[in-house]
Length: 151
Image (cartoon, rainbow, N blue to C red; front, side):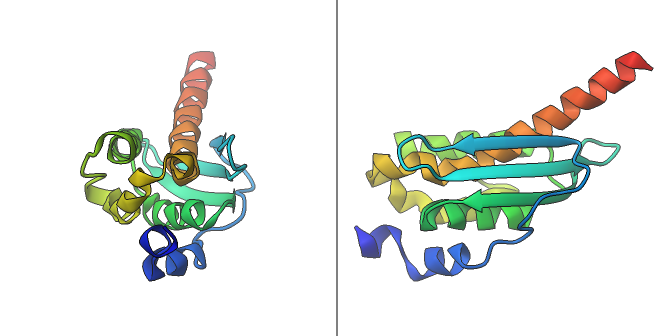
């Protein structure tokens, strides 16, 4: 198991978490925790006028798999739309639970975690970063809608 899911690439990514920290004034924040192991990701985003992520920060406390996934998400979140993030989340879930190929496009690096599919206890920790990104962008879009309605 160790060699299969904790590859050199996974460990390298886990040690290099881009955009670590929090944003001072996020438009939206998402937080996810894996109940089984306690891996946690908090993601802050700001959006541009087109609803794309213009700034991104993450506070991640996770195992090597969760950290590696967060590294991939963090490296590609800027410029992403909610649709792209949700497609990556759904493809990642399908890859882990149903033998799917994994995300394509912007977040295709998450395919590196395909061997985790054989270890269900590790699925949730591998998902916290992409799920938190989806939640943060959703929260930012909802806040934008509320502000527009109040104006």
